Image 1 (spheres, rainbow, N blue to C red):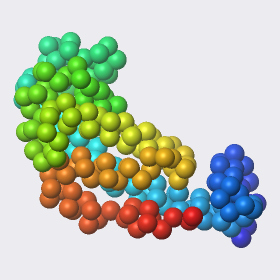
Image 2 (image 1 turned 90 degrees about the horizontal axis):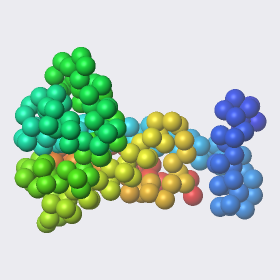
Image 3 (image 1 turned 180 degrees about the horizontal axis):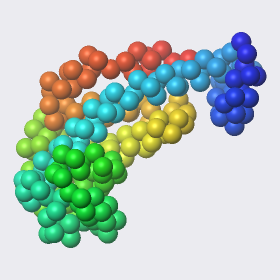
Image 4 (image 1 turned 45 degrees about the horizontal axis):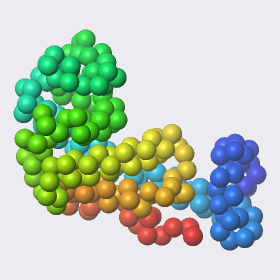
Length: 214
């Protein structure tokens, strides 16, 4: 196995995390296992893009629907809504409305962190108390606060792992890795049971997660 050539190409610093993990786990410096771990990590990152894709679209559509129930279909341009946001979230939204062509074109331009912030307690009275059960009709939690907190905390974990995946960083050593897919499926199922059934039938991450390198 041409480990040294691969390490030179990808960089020593990139492979060191994997190499150190192998040494810690099996007690010796096995470059073949290091490459297997790197391959597993890259393959898992690749197949996680599908569930992450579905999750992000589902979440932003649900948040948009809830906001629209309070502020109308063109909520991004509603000044009352804009003024209800924290400074940065408001600035991010207002910047995108300079060439406003409808909510459908704007939604993908907002960062996942913006949608996560919409799940904050400050929006509970105006948006989530009246509408959370309508946009997440299958929630297994009883109270509005618990539903909102569960979604927000899950989004925080998902977003951080998503960012690591997007930047090609290691995820095999993340303590929340095993929570990622269940959290995605939970949020999607709360929105639509048929959609989560389709997601579960199509995703390939479970097979890799069930067969780690060590």
